Length: 296
Image (cartoon, rainbow, N blue to C red; front, side, top):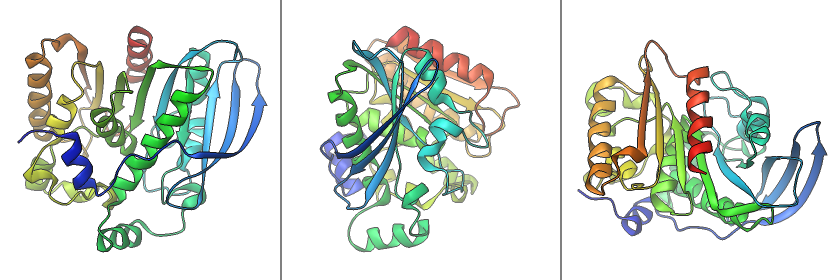
């Protein structure tokens, strides 16, 4: 098996989207950062919310982050996660802004103001029509990346990707598909899918992860390995049921091998925190901030 971008887009039944059309923008200034509330039009039709958090200084280009929000079974949160956090992750938007990053999140299908279908219903509808929910999500994120790179306050050569849980999966898949993500940090969803199936642990994940035929052609370890030699930080809770140790081990070996083959094993950092379940921790946050500070 080997990862191919072209073939992976074929499996996703999708293609990258251009930058979405910006319909409206509201700006709210805080003492030490700015929040922009955005409304986009995307190829799939309905208007899509987005948020930017950024430094107050908009006179020069900043490093940037594409933030990919999580799932958690709470479809009402969506893009609000950047500003309000979730059960297992804090509100990182202001923290990233204070650290000097322009950070963009866009709302995925099924979440927030787009919660018009159940995940099961939308997944089935797309599959029956020859498409996939993961494909639509990654396609829209590709367009969001184009919007972010074109902003006058962003340095397009210093864009990173960040995500937790569902956002973790989006993060490593989009980074493998798009070199514009110069460094990626992802939390709590790095595990080999074949092993998850063997363990009976795969059904804890959402329908959005259904990519027909994927395991006949590639694996999570190979996808993450395709990011090499770009810097990658993988954070895992050792007691997280979504990432059992044997599934992490198989994916880790494949990813580490890929980084070694290209001669940059030092560009890959894997942090496994003992006793931690499916959550962001202070130690993970410190790793993430240090990782982006060093690589963007």
